[in-house]
Image 1: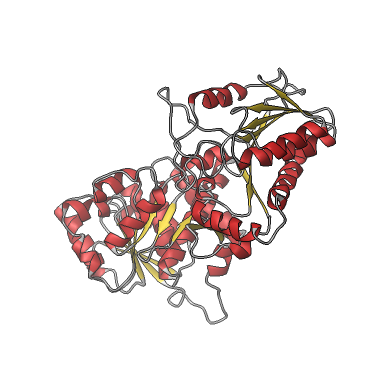
Image 2: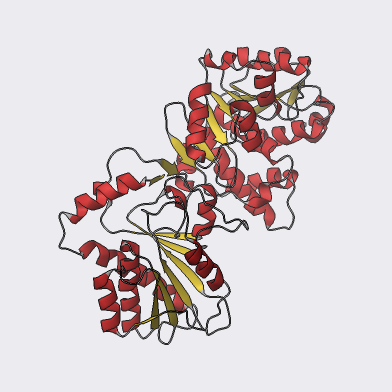
Length: 489
């Protein structure tokens, strides 16, 4: 996993490192890494020599990083123009370096721009961009380069205007982000939350982390961690010569109803794609489940299902008394459970939440934002990581807060974010597939936070796989899980 650090931790690490270096050395490291990535991007647009680069310079150290990077590019033959948003407060040494290299300062952007360097505001900024800076950034979005394509926007450390510790992005009255939208963000020394969670992550574009020697100085606990494929591969249960269907784990699925049989079919499909050896279905949609998935053992009630190592409950279950009884039966089982969709509604409406705190076996809940609001009385708000952790502590459960960048929070305060999310998953039934896969991972013996992280990662990859064939439906995602899992090796 890749650790993600809060601003205070990054500041402390920078102070410790700078105390061991000559003055200005850390900024020079950052600027060199930034210039290198800019040169590579310009290489794809016809080369550095003759390229037109615009540097947006604020009053902080990010402006200094951008100016020094501009000096590097000027020495390689680029025509670099600096636009000072706060004249008289720009980084003096960086500005001198740019001028000495042959760069110039102007009071308006040039007509042609190949690359824009966003050095307006760094990790110390709060409250979004001021109106003048926001309008300038928006106006440059359509500026064309020498090849007739829009300029490439590169953010220095973070896109200017985002809330760095939460990933929140303030909006203008017209609904535009009060922040820069970057194609690439070059981050220095450590990932920050705004690069991986919340709406700010989309504005960051592709993120490249430049090593400036900060890692040994980062102390304490990361704000969260980013799931990687190597993590999922390392957690995946291994098959041996003696493996059989029961030792691989048995997952129970209590989902669907006569009204929503598709939810049962989809959640079972997700469970079958996972690593367990057997799926037991319990519910009134057993006819449809057996028609689609003849390998499943199906019964009408949870009480008749037999032995399982984990339960999935809720997708399409309904919210009547019969459904509540099935949920109570699931919660009474001494095995891990996944609670999704209608099970979450029943927790609130049926006043069953108190049953969660007394359970010894793990619980994973999978709310989207509106379900979160029903559980908590308010939407997740600007800080999705903090929201997931609050709910996890209150419910004594692992929370998988669904979204473009799904967040997993644990009762003991750990947080993870999934980087594979895709908008194509915003369609009916894909959450049912996710719940089934998650239950299979729990039944196979994964710890609940690992099961949630792996399920979110693979679900996102399946969405991307399915999107290659055009518009995506939930059955497409279930089908795409198989080639995604096959590539895990």
